Image 1 (cartoon, rainbow, N blue to C red):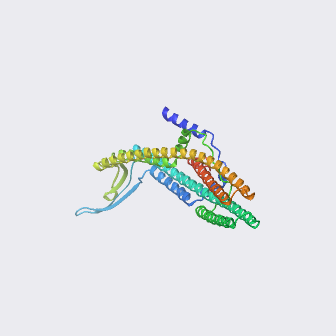
Image 2: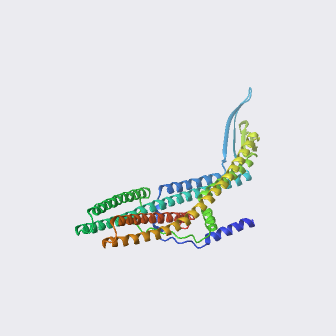
Image 3: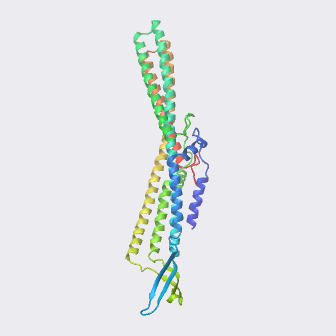
Length: 409
């Protein structure tokens, strides 16, 4: 009892800790309607209601009153005939141990329905996050491609001006036109990728408004790995599903153990015989004689409960591994993004200086084009690193249910 209390207090302390910031993330007021209206979440919500009905059925007694009426005619040899009848009601009584087991099963069904709904909500939120970041990435890549295309166009104009002035060879103009054509190709590919990303996002979430906000930035995880592990495990509906199934298996095992003692049937009856000259009232009691089949079902339920225990342990171990990977990936992705941003800034400055040097006749065109390609690649890599870092960071926040009011309970 004390140990369970300590665990509950520890879990409460984890959930009461200050939550990390989420700069640039989609607002809850926009996301919650998208999640609640999603067909997968709606199906899980209907499934939760169905399991609530199943829980109510499991907790109620399966037995009902049974009414019996019989009529007969009695004939006495060489004598009169008499009309007789017999009427009664009876009901099988559920033993207390079985009622207790049924309540445990009903509670397990309630927990499972809630957990399955929460898992559908969680998976839909992760899908929304992924599709949104894919679209935001594609739109930012399109903006970047347009900037590079404009730079290539400006460079071609500068080269043509120098060619007319006799300060540059005609070959330079051909190289500049080739560079512009390549940037135009990149822009078309970026435009196509943005259209495809939006189509996927809009098809999955039709209510999503096409208003591109600032691409979110990741932050270093200030909290300890223990904080995140305990928080994610406490909020994991995937784990709660297996725990609810274990609770149900334990309830079924208790039910099968109690079933080894059959439920008795009791009833009242009354009868009229000899044309009503004899009236009979009585009490009826019956109980099945248990056999080997009941013991076999009990044994099978015990084995099923053991399977569920192993499944809970396996799921917890898998989640532990996945959480560790997510935390390491988020930390590494954030550091990689910082390095990529610094490298991209240096490459941009280098390309800008070489552009000026070429304009002044102090650098050749191939050197300038090489520097510009390096700057373009560095900027694209920095953008990809930023999206990867945001995906890892906000994926942890979604798993921990600290954003978008994910704590459905």
